[in-house]
Amino acid sequence: MPDSIPFDVAARDVAIRAIGATIVDVPTVRRHKLAQTAVSAQSYVIVRVRLANGAEGIGEAATLGGPRWSEESVEAMKANIDAYLAPALLGHPADRIAQARCRLDAAAKRNNAAKAAIESALFDALGQTLGIPVAVLLGGIVRDRFPVLWTLASGDAGQEIEEAEQKLEAREHRVFKVKLGAHAPEVDLARMQRIAAALDGRAELIADINQAWDEPTARRWLPALHALGLRLAEQPLPAWNLAGMARLRGQAGMPPLLADESVFDPHDMLAVAQAGAADAVSLKLVKHGGLLGLQRIAAVADAAGIGLYGGCLLESSVGAAAHLHAFAALPVLEWGCEHFGPRILTADLVETPLRYEDFNVLLPSGPGLGVRLDEAAFTRFART
Ligand code: MUC
Ligand code: MG
Image (cartoon, rainbow, N blue to C red; front, side, top):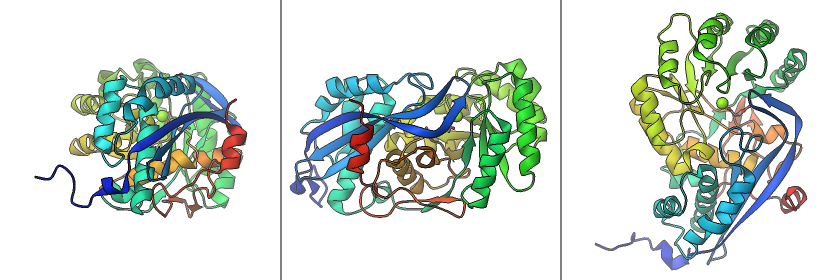
């Protein structure tokens, strides 16, 4: 048995020569307010991987308000990449990505977002070396356009209705996710009622509570949201409360529940499935540690009859492109995606931003991730 594949990629010298991590902060077009934080700029770690053959791959790790959405901050990610994760991969062949992921796991516990950015950059560099898109490396393209929603998160119903009208008019988005939980439930319900009445029959709504409610609160207020025709209620309860989520699902008059912060690794996904805690799961590279991890979560969810939703953490076109390649190769993606991130930034980080057309976002074409860093934007937003 040869210990390598017959098509000898190693002959192209794909040894990893350098891995660099840079923090960038990009202002958003408006304040984005969710239950646990509010941001006016998005912070990312951009990872650049260089191979011996000269190919350079890029990857991105997004955060939302420092270590508030999950435990990783850009500062911690950069420190751990520089000190532990990058050294673990120097000299490793980039065509052995699954093995590289094992090395990363041996070098650091969790750090899923940091690992995802490195893994995306490896996929990008390898795809460029071979002249094929990352989705092809993942099994091939099943779909190359994705229904994409927009998130309303200023907290001001008047502004949110106006923003939704603009997106409808431009035929960019007709599903809207509303961020709840920063205010009392009755205030949020009144806001949802205004939005639902204004957009009635022309748009669909999802609510993301970002873990802000306890079980009695959710039991009381979710039926009122259901009565508004809510498509999905995302993570109403704390991430750990799977039994509570399952009890809510067992109650009549509830919207379908989407698990987000409850599912990082495949064990979490299995626990959600075993508890009967969700109807769908939000897939995100920052949670699952990369594209291979995302595929594993999707397989467990699929086996349990749990629907797949293409989640985001307000990525630029770098991170969004990586997600779209992973989503493109999934056998099913019932709930579409939410990769509106590039449009909430005042400027993107790539030369040619993702395209939005007819309520869909399109998979970028070309080898690797299909996006190239805009060096001027990268330098402008890099933290010094
Ligand atoms: C989340 O919890 O889903 C994704 C879209 C958005 O507005 O917030 C994020 C995080
Ligand atoms: Mg969420």
